[in-house]
Length: 409
Image (cartoon, rainbow, N blue to C red; front, side, top):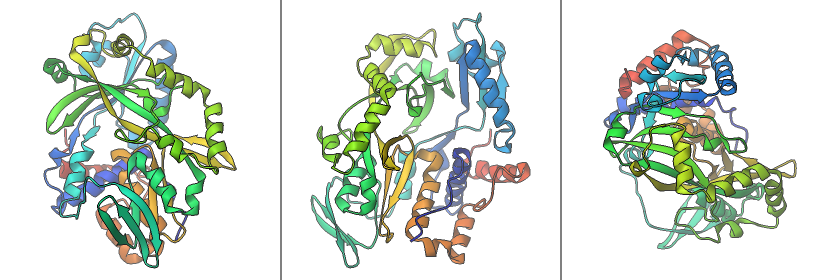
């Protein structure tokens, strides 16, 4: 099997390919009404203070070079900012530098609704626990809480539960990995008037020492067809790998081969550990105070805390040393019969490219064949192309995706 798939494109390019893939499935009527899983919601980055405004301007100017960001807007005008995000600007002090960038063609993706449509007709066996993985002459035997089944190929996409299953498989590639669990919490708005007054995803700037996934944002989302408003994330620490997992998950994942890398990561990431401890001991008032940076006129009674889930970040041995990885990683066996997805969830932005990487790693010869490449090209029209090379071609690709997914303004 091919252990070295093509380098991953940028997150923006990956998301364009995700949109193309879903567009093709809508066109072929594999997916139903796209409004049930994707909606247009502008994305903004908003900062205040001289240093942060200067940083955002430099980032905006650098991104404008690429056709993928040529439609990004910039403003320091309070009136323009009010039009973009009235709730955020209400009651805000104007005696300080303010700035925002805005991408009108942002989206909100309900990945749960999308997944349910994609799995229609599949043989789903829910509510079962995978207890063991054993090699067979033809692939793998998967032992579950209700019996066993055999398969020539196994994909471990169990979120935080992927690492323990990968370790149980016994493949040598698993020995390079450990885990660092981080829990996530959000403030959820319960006031319909406040929810209706905001329609955007507004991102701030992460605190010093905070992990990348902790960038605070005020987030319009659509859940089960209803508009919602969330703010966060607030990080925490738990030894569980899943929300309903065992407190022993972390301890059981530490093996002789990953003990030292795990300890090294703890020693080298003291700022992160301190940040997580601070998040764990936060009082409700402190969470509301951080929200007040985004919503000066916030009322605490409009919001309540909800636990979102667990992230299990990767601890990977790099040149014999432990390194904390904040992204997503595909791990596969040498014979291509098993693959696992570790790390933070790839989300809508990179989900399609991640699964293509699984195909390249585990079914390399077939994936490289002309027949498979033609099928990929049919599903993802920009397959094999650089979307940043031609503004005209990118516009054509986006026009198709917008029309099929109902994303036109």
